[in-house]
Length: 422
Image 1: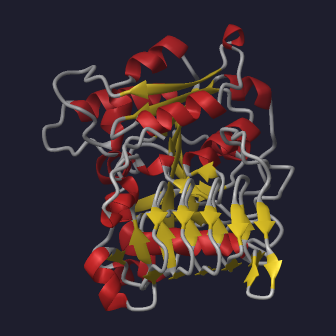
Image 2 (image 1 turned 180 degrees about the horizontal axis):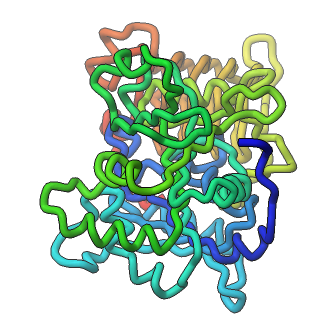
């Protein structure tokens, strides 16, 4: 391509863009973290939920028509959206709405990503957009969708796919796009069993970010056609994209830093280990994801908690935290926290030590505890003298230990019955 796309009539285009956020999947690889909540509702970064990142992207990109499609254990997510995302003016046809699965087209719940949109085609007809933006609700990244839309128009594409370079060893988890030198998609393989065979060619390959922008009319036509196929899984990655790359103009939009031309930050925190690593990265001196960027704020539901408090400064009892993120409402009472992330309303009692751990909201940790390389789920009450993360064999008896040795603790593992409506 000869030049970068120019923004033309962008305000009109954004007003004629309808966004669907797919937020119905459980995310079973997060194990007990999704026992009571859907993956996009999992807490992240001390005060946020995972879905806050894609919704913030929409708002910061001036996308003002947003439908969130829910299904699995959605109450926590719906409450969060109601509390934190009532931003727009309905009289101007602006909205963020949660749309529950309703079996609109028959007796099935959503059976694939394409089927989720197919079952809500009435919303596309009602709003009559020019473009439909389809987003996964469970990824962590900051992206200007206005630039994506501008690129979509510039190439004359029917479909543009957000794409990112990933290491070969991670390719089996994603849809892999092969492109020509102008980023037109010439192949698509969903979760390849032998990624090395693909990557050992001269074709540039990217992972799909689960970010799609369709021309609305083409999308409606292809969804109707796919719905008739008894052999289809009704999924964008498995069925729709591989089918249309030979008949429609499908382009990749490489998600790169404009200054360095290196891949921008994007994480699918779909496993306990990736969730822990992404959280630990936030604590670093120069994190890959900057939560303090006032030009691209991450919004969330507000909490009316007081500021964090550190108490006691005795010789053998000092409340402190170093190299850590500590959210509002926390009380560090004569305990020491090191390289950890404490979510809102956490209390840690005297002479306890927390290292390299993620503590989710409303956790109470007793006295003389030692917790290392752990994730403590919301609402846990950790008894005095509890040791977690020092003996994997002992941890496996009571808790869940990941491949990388991260110990996950949730209330029922401690014999505590918690009825989550978060």
